[in-house]
Amino acid sequence: MTTFTEHTKLAEIVTAQPGLARELETRGLDYCCGGAATLADSCRSSDLDVDTVLAELAAVDVEDVAPAWATMSVAELVDHLESTHHQYLWAELPRLSALADKVVSAHARRHPELNEIAACYATLRADLEPHLTKEERVLFPMARELAAAGTAPTIRHGTVSDPISVLLVEHDTVGELLARLRELTSSYQTPADGCASYAALFSGLAELEADTHLHVHKENNMLFPAVVALEQQVAS
Image 1 (spheres, rainbow, N blue to C red):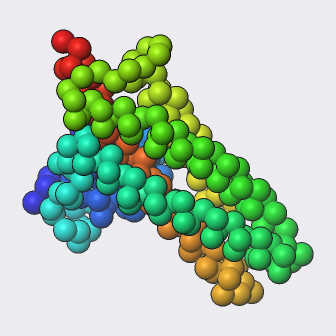
Image 2 (tube, rainbow, N blue to C red):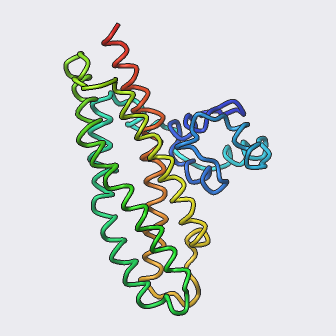
Image 3 (cartoon, one colour):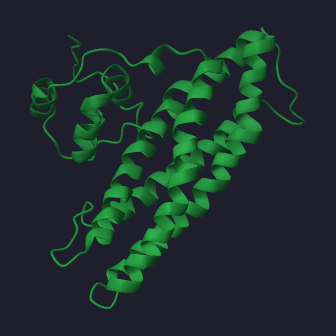
């Protein structure tokens, strides 16, 4: 059984037991963009008692087996990210846009907050889609080249760290937008008079948040450091 302490980093918790991701999320502990922080530091920032949180995490019944992606090579992880999280987003983002338009049209008169929810989601989609394209056309090919050839990819200026630094900033923005969506939707709670489409929208947004948090975790805390280390190894 994996044992965590107050010194365990949030990213390490989710990599060892992905089933605990939702537990961290419900406590406001950011394991993706803030994955480098220890549990103690994160609890302190969120005004939580670290010993209580450790006991609660230990009581959760999750599979104590590291997922396949935790030990993937750079090339395998890039393929996994593209076929899993990227494919999901390319399909889900337009679906949720259409559903949001439908719900706003039917319910915004009684629930004007839907207008702000839809606007926030539209901003999120407008940020995510070019971000995915940038990864697929720039970073992922560079990572595959490094992994396959063992030589540094051709970059007009700088190193692989340059696109990664941009992507990290964009991840922070996505995290802020997801947090705003959670706030605007009262943690995705469908109102009593909400129809099936209303519930489907909020359920879809909750799933989008969970998937994107795990997606960002795999990139920020696993892929990006591995690609930088690989480039340094090739250059040495």
